[in-house]
Structure formats: C-alpha cells, structure tokens
Image (cartoon, rainbow, N blue to C red):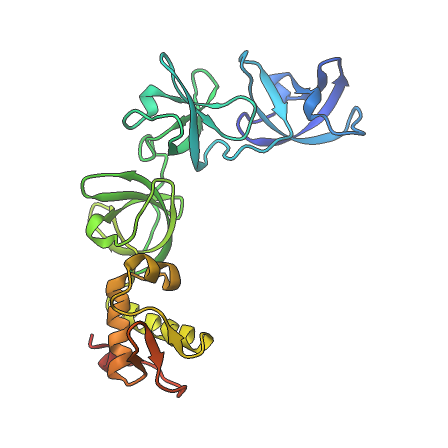
Length: 291
C-alpha cells in the first residue's frame, strides 16, 4: 500500500489523458500528472514517486523530491499566510506545505525561515508542519554522554539561550553566555554535550571543556601555522567571528590555546597575529595547558 508523505515504488496500472494511474493498494488508483511522467514508461513499470494530497485534497504522485518527508525535521521558508488556516511553507513541491496556526510558536512572517517537523494528521490524512518539536513524542529520548561532539540545528531563541535539535533527535539548550558568534534559527552548528540533567534535559556548548578543549585546539593552531608559512593573522585582539570561522572555536578557547603555546615557547606574538617559533614536533601536556 502507498504510504502518504513518503516515497513509494508504485506500479503503473493505466494511461489516461491526465497522466498515469498508479497502484496505491488500499488507497486505490493514484494519479501521476503528465508533467511528472518520465519518457518511455509503460503499463506494469515500477515508478519511484512521492505521494501527497493536491489542492483539491486528492491523492496524487510526483517524481519530484520534497525538502522534507513525513517524520523529518527541516528548515523551510514561509511563502504566504492565510488569515484563517495558517502559514504556507516552500518544501519544493507545487503545493506548499501548511503550517497551521495551532502548530506555530508565535506568529511567523513571510520570508521567515522556520524549523518544523513534518507529520501526517491522523484525522484529515493531510501532510502538515509543526514548530512544536518536543510535543507528542516527536523526539524520542536518545542516550548522549557528557563531552560528546554533536551536530546542532538551532530551532528557537528563548530568554535563556537557543533551543537546538541534537543530532536531529533530541532537544537541548545552548545558553546565551556560551554563544560568542551570531546564531540564526535554522543554522546548523558543531557543538558538544555540556551536561545531562537528572530530568534528561541536555545543556549544550559550542566548545569542549577544560583540557579536552585546549589541547586539540593548540594542535590545530600549530597545524594552521605550518600550512600558512608560520604566520596567522589571528591573535587575542581578533574578533570572535574571525576565530570561529578559521578554527571553529570560541575566542575564550583560542586565547587559552595560544597562551599554552606561548608558555611552551612554540609561538610569539607579532601584533597583529602570531608566528611559529620553530617546527619542532610538540604535544601539549596537562601541565602546559594550565588545567
């Protein structure tokens, strides 16, 4: 049986003036409009299609691939707003995806990027979007560990910080004081699990903690210096954005790392920038890091 909101392999049953009719199992025949019909397809051939409802609420198929299918979390742009039903999102298909008012967190605006989960409404059997990622068991608990590197998707700004989806599976919080660079809703970042609270909630960080942060960063700085002829334009006066872009680290972590390298006589400050003193093989110790 065809699954609504997913890609399906469906068999061609017959041709018509409107397009091909595919075998949807219990859903009956599903139309693949002419504009999506590949050349050379005949009765009995299997086709890889996405199944959804058109503007007249009929099940139809498309060979196009949406930016998200049922069960996915994605960042989509608001393209229009209907005063009675909600906002419509561009998800890559001819019919835009509905984000009902009841599924919004605050009121969205045209042109805004929103992070939503795509789901199938059980009552209407229509595909809709929701900004409420943590409700109705949408995010299953996952076992993470303190210090684990993870991929973050920024979903919402709050008074405490930024809510983020961790590895596309579980919600976490990135506190404002831990954010030294501009962050936008829908942005993907590399981060770390800072702590896991007794209630299972996750606190996040953009940097590792302590020696686990300083030592690897110090090595990356030395490697960057070696690749760049022994000089980098970065130092403790550089803006946080430049440091984050070049090394993927906060300014605080960078200052700790270059302090470690300076104490070990591996670099000197050239103002602006830093220079490699020599190319001697070096590995920082906990004593060097001051941790």
